[in-house]
Structures are given as structure tokens and as C-alpha cells.
Length: 229
Image 1 (spheres, rainbow, N blue to C red):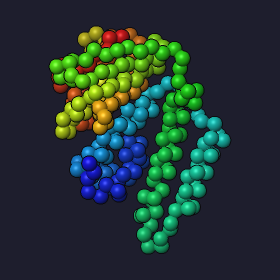
Image 2: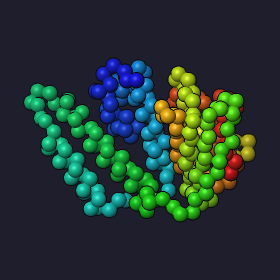
Image 3: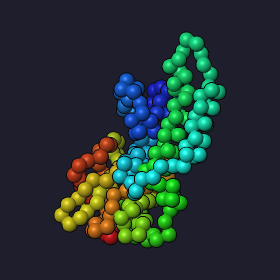
Image 4: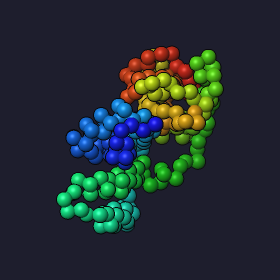
């Protein structure tokens, strides 16, 4: 379900997470999200990728030719966009999807490295233990790269809606210490996923709880899922 003026803000989620919105635009988008479930869900779905960028594996610059090609596309779309004389703010909105898309592509290339985008061969899959009383239809598995030093990805199916204003949140357990990881939401078909860019080598388990939108610093309930590493 969308909120009022959804068409105006539909392309802002990526730019919002990348910090590419001006202060007044960010405030307007945050106000819009309060009444727009679709935009809130889109932000939560994109948040793991945005969170992963600064904490990813060794950085490397994308090839100059690829960078140039992406920027050529941005310039071409900018030249093709309508340029009303007295409505310049609309031009900025018409360009945002291309700019945000280019920023995401460049960010992923820089953050994860071109080689990392192809995936690794040394991967293991661990089935999650699910609390059947609270998530009776859910199942999940964790795909771990190597020893876990390159992070992991948790995918789930059959997830129920966690409730109004709530999301699922992953956690990393090391002994008595539990560190917060990114949040994620369930799609309409009950599927959900979250990237865990943190080094998991030496971790004991990955946990999942249901928390208020935006995430928590400490778990608010006993885990509904657990993956022992």
C-alpha cells in the first residue's frame, strides 16, 4: 500500500540511504515514509546493501572505462530529460533515478570489488533453527563464504508480518556479546533476506529477532531464529 504523493518519492529510497538527498528533501522523504508502507519496505530492503558498502572487503576502484560508460549514461539521460524553463526542480527529480542508479553501481564496485561481484566458490550453507511456536511456517538458511571472514547472507521463507512498525533484525553472537546487524523485511510472499558483511570468523551464531523499525542496539526478545556457526 502506498501513501500520499508516493509517485513524488518513489525513486528516493536509494538516494536517501546513500545520503544523496538535500536536508529538506531528506526531511520530506522521512515524513512521507511515516504514511507509506511501500517506501518503508523499500528502504529496509535496500538498507543491508547500503550498510555493507563501508564495511566490505578490500576496496578497489572500478575500471576507468566502466566508470566513464556509467557517467555517459547519466549524461545522456540528463540531456534527454525535458527542461521546462520555469520548473527547474522537476528536472532534478527526473534525473535522480539515473544518478542514484549510477551511484549504487559505482558504490558496489568500489565497496565489494569487481572480483567479489562474481561470488566465491568456497561456500557452505547452514540451516537455521526456527522457533515453530512464533514462526510456524518459516524456514531459513545461512550461506557463509569461506571461514566467514567475507560475511554471509541469510535467506528465509514463510515469514509472517512481524507487526505494524516492526522489522526483522539479525544479530552476531560471540560468547556473551551480541552485536546488532542489519534489519530486513518480509515480502508479500513471506520471503526475506539480509546481507551480513561483518567478519563472522570466530562468531558462535547468527540470531534473528523482531524489533521496531530502524533496528535496536540490544535484542528486545528471545531469538525467533538461530544459526549455529
